[in-house]
Image 1 (cartoon, rainbow, N blue to C red):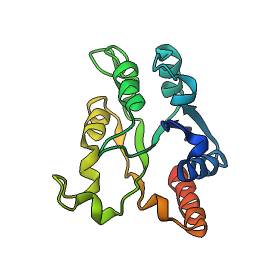
Image 2: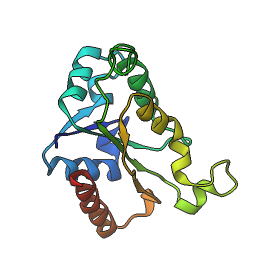
Image 3: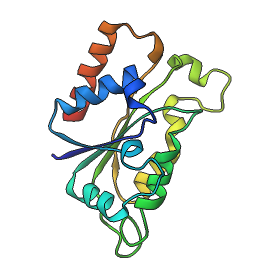
Image 4: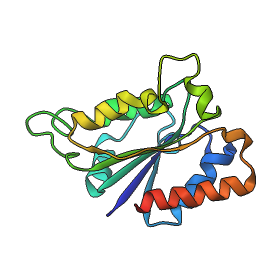
Length: 170
């Protein structure tokens, strides 16, 4: 199964967590599309990105959670790339039956995310993404989450990176 990781982190070199996850992912046989690096102005090469999606069976969106959502480049990516005639519509079946998942890092602890919040489960935060995948006929796979990212010890981060590699291969 060919896997594509779409990495949406605005400053990957300054990120301890997502940089470690990126390194771990690249130890597997994956392709990676780094959105902020390739498209700092958010002007996507739509056809090139669509070709990447078509060539892969599993697509994992990797990003830090910002204010109960994904980074803005990822929202724009989905808006632009999942276009009518490609991802949906009578002839838009390019993403049908592909596996979609995501790897999300959170600064907060898991119980803090839903405490005094409108969501009951962390997965509820990403219902729009899950619905988007479903709408285009893709299969949503269980997400990979890392909580309390700023407080992970080096050893815990190594373990999370190993677990992420296993998630990618599963």
